[in-house]
Length: 433
Image (tube, rainbow, N blue to C red; front, top):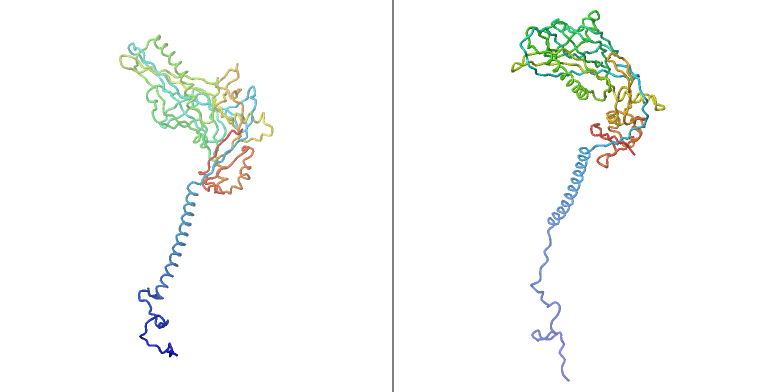
């Protein structure tokens, strides 16, 4: 029987895996060792992440504020509104004739007289010289700043220049009454008239603006200071020797100058019409003055004839209102005009004889027979300025019956109120359907 040797007593020099234990297994030296992260680095990393989050939110808030500011700027810079208005309109039938009164009071159809200075010249041969004595003449504007009533001045009424020289009107005139503006101030009424110097001679010629008083009103200080005339073109006065012109040449030249003056008068009336007025066809009259005669080059004489063209004119809105009073049921004196005043004309009825001394004339109207109610655009803008869009219909209703319908468009589209500045509100008039 063999002896059994216990493993625990086996020699350490014996070879073989049977002699290894977990305690004797060596740890590899090439493995990466774990190095703990210091606490301060962990804190820095945590703070960095928090800082990045804070910066992000700061930028986000800045962007929102910037967008709000840009929106506010855009909203204010481009803010505006367009109001499209369809006014009340109505077709009418023109009456055969209307009666118009010269410078009539409110509520009565009125017409005025407009005077325009016109002249013509011709050069004719001179045959020696001749003794002449002519009086100066020209156009004067006569003003009434005294009251709202018209004032008639009879023929030969005197006007005195600052140096005491006297000039007279040849025919009677009617000076319109003054008008009151919105603030109650008087705007002088005026009319033009031809005046003649009281005596011949060059001393009565005037080339600069001069103010004249009316001696006949000297006993009434207020009337004396409020009625006056102004003129800057009074000429033709002379005495002494002047070129002699044969009667045949004078007659030919005078006929040609008169025709030129007539032709010029119609154009002068059209170009000098006040805004909102139309002339009355058939009422144009021309008053001719004295022909002046002065030397010209080449042994000739220059003949000049001055004239004053007078025509009746009427305000288109006054005529439209007179027709509305006759034909529109329920009309209560609202402001009315023709839909297109340029397509309406006034004239004396056929067969009527006109006199410049008349104070009442028949008036015939022709053209596009349509009336349009008027409203104050400035007042509408002021009424809407700064108001909420929801108040639009209520505000527009206060402009009835002139405004039949109105729509509003605001800019930018998100605005819910009208601009506070009325200048940013535009009114567009539409004829509607």
